[in-house]
Image 1 (cartoon, one colour):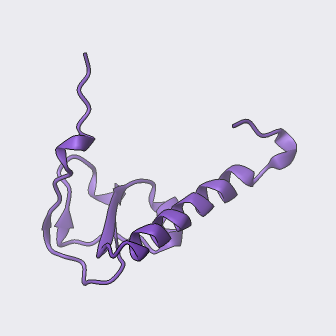
Image 2: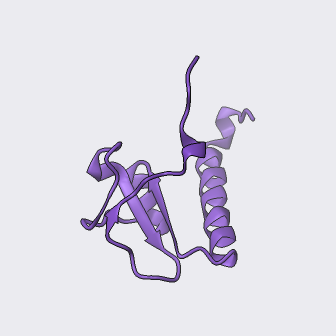
Image 3: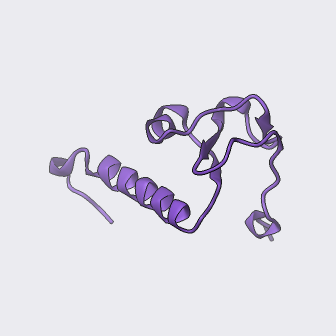
Length: 89
């Protein structure tokens, strides 16, 4: 998608809408929470926060966040499913 310069701000509105919709879908599906690696300034607006008891070794602590949807934030080390591993050839 390409937007003209006169559509300033639309990129952020589209991104925010997609994040909110994703959170809504996961909540509706019964997910207990969400973890992600991303920009603090962006994801904090959706309620994502860093939690000292929840870590992910492959990302700097200041870029790793969680959002509780129904349960308390767990403690421990996050390991993503193998489906998220990229294999370069």
